[in-house]
Length: 156
Length: 430
Image (cartoon, rainbow over all chains, first blue to last red; front, side, top):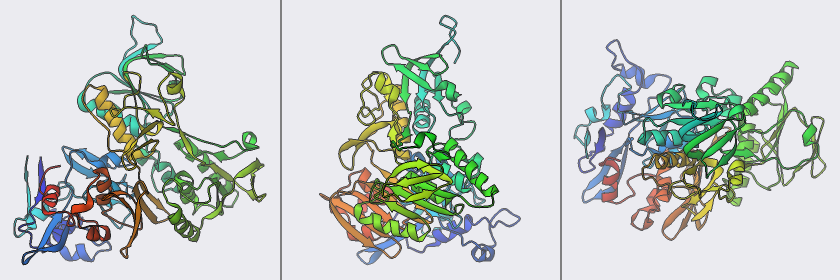
């Protein structure tokens, strides 16, 4: 299946992916269905939370190494297997979370090998659902990446 | 699943029998169906409910979870998976015959099966206490019916215009989750434990005091190193003669693997049922999974009972795949816990052996247990959103030699791994 992949060789560390992820999932769509009221999204009662995060640190030669990490949609998803409520499930290979059933117990936090679940401010966990559940339709992080450091494709 | 006309009226034939309807049983169903989409599958439970999440009973009692969200899988799960689910006290398994592959039910029916998995979970252990038999409004706390019983008493006391006095025996996971659920609904909560410290299965001696202080600050009252000597009319007398009146008494001294009928059938047991790495018992065709089993803890190298939900599901899944004839191995078992109590979070995994390293990153305090360039275990206090990266080091017995551990233990991230490992983690399918 198509997944999000990352290449640290070309990541600029601009954090646009985080910003666009948070915005795409902000749930503040206009009449076209897209969340285009950025002011409303970022100044509302709840700060939008990114499901992707850029790690930055080490130096390689003159360059600083950066890369983004988001849910790998694992074939053996420890988060789903460990979920105590059944809120996490796999649908056509995509790992989804039902926020009605999530109680924010953090079992998935301690199960995920990549550290890809994040807390929301309403006591549930959030994760990348490849933007299939929001109005963006395909990963906003990929669309936003100016250097193609994040791609959405099928790989073996 | 039809009654076989060639056999007795009272006989049910099935290819697969799953005994248990919680995490391990459901894991077994999913495991079987991942290989065999259509073989006859019968699931039995002595509780009358659709599969529900046991740990949610405290959340339900607290009022944080709606009844319809108690389900562990969607309500069409049995239909979607071709499962005949027989649920209720009639369908309690009384005995099992490993030679003839039959199980006898409480209602007198016999199930004839090709392969079975025992996922019977655990049962509360209540120590012998004087007056227990005549005690009123006392509950164990592992099933939905227990929580419903507590709810009824709380409601009744509320109708009298007051809040209940709660006494809890047991400062372990179950007792403290019950305390959390009732904290805002009770006049007082007093927790008694024979052990001198809280959460002995999750915390070290050195960290238990810290957690106890935090919980005491948030309203819980402890009587540790003491036991209940006797129970009278809505009051308990402790081993040091202190008398505590109660409206609700919760008995959460511990649980034991539910191995009764398995042991009687000659299935090898330690504390729990013993299995091989495919989850098969010493009786061919009979598997076991979840809280009723003992299994290898890869973080300590010891076989033990590790009653935690993620393991139960994974063991069940391994049993199911094996029952359906494909190769599956469960070799990733170790304790993993995430525990939130009154807004305070603790994450832990593995075993607490080796050298202890304490890292305070400002957000949380992390205790790492290290030996031979491996991470054996950890306990983290506070929110640590990427703690699973540490868990994975235990799961894979990762050699820490090539990793920037200064960075990693300060801040869990993929960055601390070498270039190749990083690429493997973010640029390849998993």
